[in-house]
Amino acid sequence: MQTGQIRYDLFADRHVIIAPQRMRRPDFPEAWPDLPDSAECPFCEGREDLTPPEIFALRDNTPPNTPGWRTRVVPNRFLALAVETPCRPVEAPATGEGYEGFGAHEILIDSPEHRFDPRLLRTRDARAWLWSLRERLRDLRQDNRLRYFALFKNHGRAAGASQPHPHTQIVAMPLVPAPALARLQRAHAWYKAHGQNPFDAAVREAGEGGRLIAESDRFALIAPYAPRFAYETVLVAKHGVPVALWEMDDPLLDEAAALYTALMRAAGAGMGDFPFNLTFNTPPAQPFGDEALWHELSYYWRFALTLSPRLYGAGGLEAAEGIPLNPVPPEAAARQLAETIKEYL
Ligand SMILES: [Zn+2]
Image 1 (cartoon, rainbow, N blue to C red):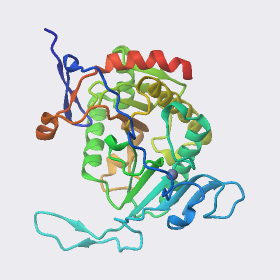
Image 2: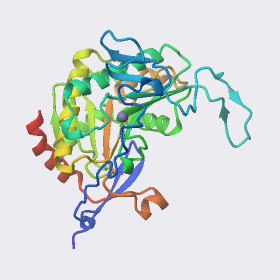
Image 3: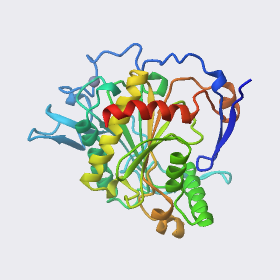
Image 4: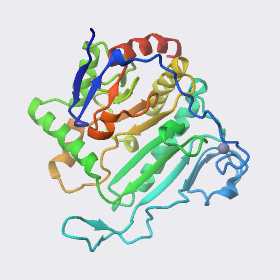
């Protein structure tokens, strides 16, 4: 009988069980089995008056808050954090810490089109999206009280999205959240112990282990060794690329956008309009208390973007112990994607 494998991801500090024998015929759920109508959508072109006034837009000579844009950034209507709030601690019990809700929460509307389909993504749209994200981060970074940016995108009901119109969230915080800090510390410790960048090592090992999907001069697409989700893929920068999106120049964004587009189209070719989460591993934006961790960032960190398809619901073991069961070995996922992606590169 074929058994699975228990694998550990050093940086996520998480065990996963790779369990191919549990492979059901994948049903490839659709992102929006019941696509909410665009009639009421506040993110569609022509409804600019339904959002708070825009903070940023990529548009050609049209006035703010009117049609004629390619991307648009607005404050989140359900604001959890605001820059107007004082940045200071609040009284908390001895077993906790508390801060005022200082920060920023912005929504980047990726496109004027209501419907996103990975099979139809164009490089020019991916470039406009990355470019807009970079511009927002550059602007937010001018406030040196904002130390960390969480960047993420949810597509489809199974991925936790409630709004189908394609959008990306930017949450700027005055501190480095505990899980992000722990990842930085583990990567830094690995670098100290091995004398090399753990991301570079992961790309090399992906090449040796049959998990390299594609690469360009300065980016690689890999299936990680211990992926939490079936067909999880990481777009990771190689040596010499700035660790932060806000430091990248236009040619780098173009290269990343081209590889990202090819990945989306290849994944879509196999899985249709699949639900997914997309996360960036942004480094801290300002010094954050640990001198070595801050000054040595480029030695142990890299820009990376993780695509996590949400094809299967969480099982009981994941709910109880945080151990996901992944029915698709990353070696098999990489083989399939590497074959398909050739058509789109
Ligand atoms: Zn819409």
